[in-house]
Length: 367
Image (cartoon, rainbow, N blue to C red; front, side, top):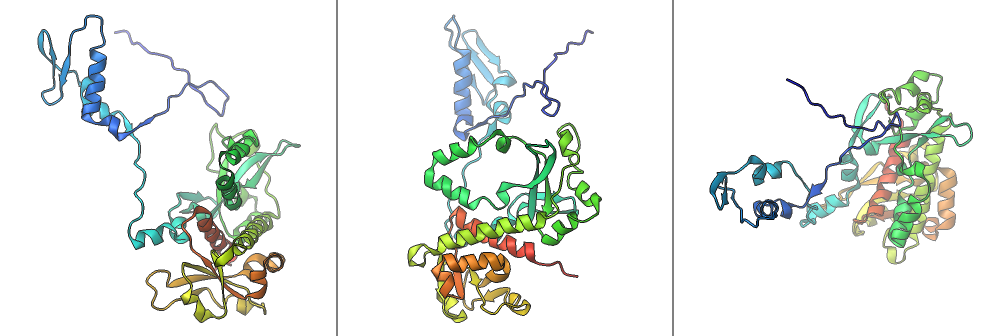
């Protein structure tokens, strides 16, 4: 028996070859009902030059023609056609109960719901929120690969605000910034802790090699085999996160009527604040004991938000950014205790996530 084969051209992006791959398309559930599929198949069957009427009976699995009933081919069966189609996911239903509404704007639940990723340095699987993503980019002058922190790690809040304010114009401006941003890159994930970054900057080269050790195959370009790691990467990432957090807090505090940030004279007044999110604390006398004096604050009798995170901004943002926070915002200049409120908007949830990520980034591992 002669064997027939067909040669199909494919594209291996890593080798730069041609590809003609086919992508699956999703279809709406209304077009995948038995009635819609039978109507579609029947329209194709009756589309001929003879004009003979052909009808399908899905229950009896027969075809009615002028010559009589014939067994229906499995290719015309709506159940078989539906099994070969991918249905579009229905949009999530809006939150109805109080628990769903609070869960929707809970930053801790959002962090735990991020996809799982693997940290090759600590050899642990964690939600993506707790990891820092690094992309291998090409240096414009030396053309050598460098490990650069991804933009979605700490440059997302202001970008989302610009998109929401300017609409499609901001999206078009960002997409036209260059092909490198949209192109696929070799990436790696590291636990977002300052102590881990400092270990990567040490003399042990095996730790830096383990960052991309699992990325083997044709997708790895030559410059990605031995990318350069900055010796001060821990300070670069820390300064970027601190700068964005301080700038966003200044902008939120400037909104009238204490919509996002509300000052409190004493700790007992926190329980009277509506939409409580987390506590922003600016102690005047800064020392090591005061930096870790409050980790959480309990609100007695509260159904939701009974335990609030306390962020010591002097320790969290550093002396330079905390001084800029006081100089650019009168609310932070005249108040020591403030509450950052909780809103279901994407940027507010991301601000809470950024402060919590800074807290975990600076926290020293337990001995």
